[in-house]
Image (cartoon, rainbow, N blue to C red; front, top):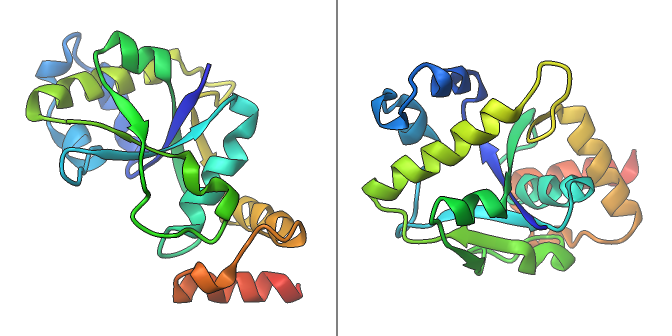
Length: 178
């Protein structure tokens, strides 16, 4: 069963998702911070299994403005289906430096104000399934861990640094000589 991965903006706000029984009663802080859309779409990256998380992290990292500590949410597509949220493969808006990940970009579609409630519910379901002992669907990666993933991708000749933004290209160049 596939999963969609999204970078989180403010992981520390997630505990507020369980403050109220009904997501419609939660303050708008979490949804307005986490669900920034473009033309009603939420950008995600598809992985086929939880073990493939590094690929989504790499895709997000190389399309970011900088490499730093990042938090991610892994969304089981069955939970999206159960909440009436559609998703499909789309163009990421840029050619990313790791060509074999280019076609793993997916958007959650037609996100309206009404569907923001559904998106918030999906996040609440995922947050509620997490335990203090194990990060399964909400994961943090340190800057060092992300750089190690990049080093591995560099050693496997997966990265075309010419497609990277200037700050990411600089990191790639530094890691290439390290």
